[in-house]
Image (cartoon, rainbow, N blue to C red; front, side, top):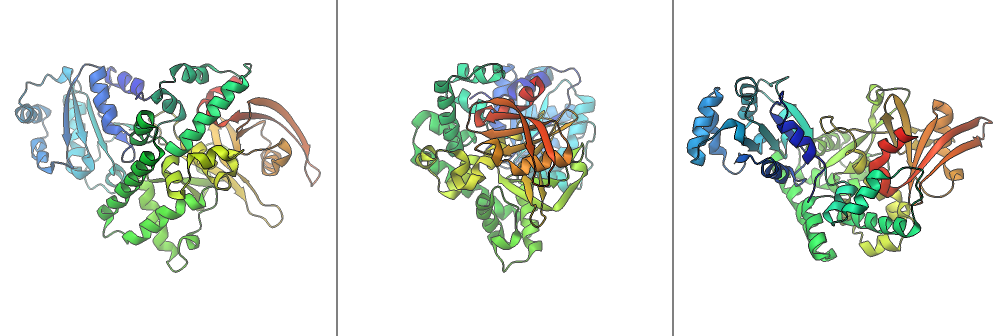
Length: 454
């Protein structure tokens, strides 16, 4: 299946100032497949080493001289190695932390050899390393589950995908095409973006098979908990994993997971799940200016899952249930809609930037309000509401726009696109006016491009 980041990797491998690349992402998002596909695309001989499968191969890298390391690798693979014609892939590098520091020598002494390292639990290594980090001599790339556009490509819907890539707001989307895209997006909600699930769905169209794959993946993540042994009780991690899909779209409250366990314990669990990229934190920010990270409230946050398909499996949702729902925001009280929008937003920034999500909330008696997501587009702050219905229901958005005095907002729903002027009077008498860009769920992947267009 096609991944949009392949073109980024091809540019990296052809770059004159290329550095060893670290691919970061959760287990089963397709890191290994993508690197193998890159080697094939660029006609490079792949030298792949998986340290989790065979830790003894660490001994091949004892020297700090890349030439000596290549001699060892040449003997191991029983082939002559020409650095310019090969791609060295160090998979599951978190199992061999000492190898990480060796990357600096490849950057300095053998830049002609492209080197990629990856690992499913790499964040733990990066957060707690005891070796000398090769600062300035490595690059990073973040890989997420398949976007909706990649989901279309996996289905062979290249022309439909191109339609989204080329769509502009002056184009009127035919109702038949709109309905087709909404149906495809509902499939995406259930299947998700993890390659194994998508591949099975494309080949077999079996919901039973999809559910089995998703539950197997959830079991794989739970089995990974044994690697955290000594850090936290495994039972607590299982509790939180089950609780996150049930609290989608809501402030994460530890006591709702298990009132008998301390908040400190669950705080540690959430941190571990975030590091493993099984879940992602949506940070509460003040949204007074850019960067959004400058004013965050660390104790107030929401959580989303790695993947909408895993959420659906955990919640026991089926494609029939979602197809029967007239409005996607009615599914799981709108939580799954927030999940999938946040998941897609994580794919929109350049891959060398670590994805981050933000929202805004005001908790005042009689005047509470919440904006589902807040993004930075250029130097501008743009609020995003995942809503249905008329503009008259957007009370929180109207209040936010009055407080922040911003010119533009975004609404995501299942309706056709529109770009309208909003003028309303708040209860306190304030007049509010702004531009509202309303986009259907299937155009979230084109958000930044369409914002720049208007």
